[in-house]
Image 1 (cartoon, rainbow, N blue to C red):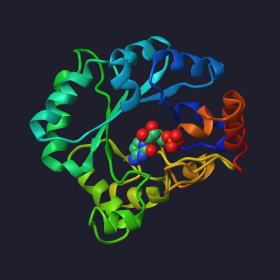
Image 2: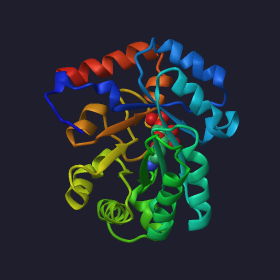
Image 3: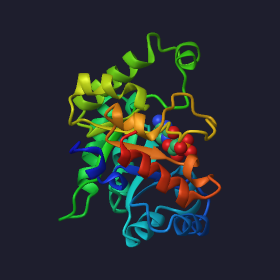
Image 4: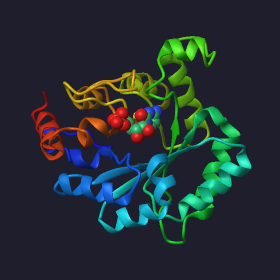
Length: 247
Ligand code: C5P
């Protein structure tokens, strides 16, 4: 990822809009409201379980890049099979939980490569570290992982790199620690993004788009700050203006 002068960057290639809807009609309405400004979208469980993975091909036909966020987490053999199936749908990025361990991640990588149609490039394979809705207190007291969030995420990033992942999902707050342990070319995808004034919702580890990029995020994932805004096109355009001005 090239980090050039702020106003020369193609911000729309690095901002992934979360299409958290239950049917295609809502997706079409959302994309129409955004006036063709979006170039990268995310299909999560909500949309994929409702519409089926065919929605990925539909979005690709609209000229969009697609991140399929199904967070695979299972035994290695099943994770491998899941990735073989997913690879056929033409996604640009897919993910799994690092907590599944190195053997699971390696099997998933194998499945993804085997399932990718001949002549096509395999999607980027990204590991989820700690969900951005999880606070350090929840991690320590409920999930029973001791230590700081930053240490845990950095450890997961190291494991993901060892298992051949292309990068990790984490909060923007942990990006510098991830780059330190896994190197600057190891991709960071960061949800937990809120434009100023929008509601935090269920997320806990959040920051603004500009701060996320300042911390070195390669991609940001943004949903409700844009999709639930009174005027989504205006909210998107304002975000891009702030990024271009390097505020
Ligand atoms: O609406 P909001 O901007 O909070 O949406 C964030 C999106 O990123 C959601 O689709 C959520 O499932 C996803 N996500 C996340 N934290 C992760 C991985 C994915 O919030 N660690």
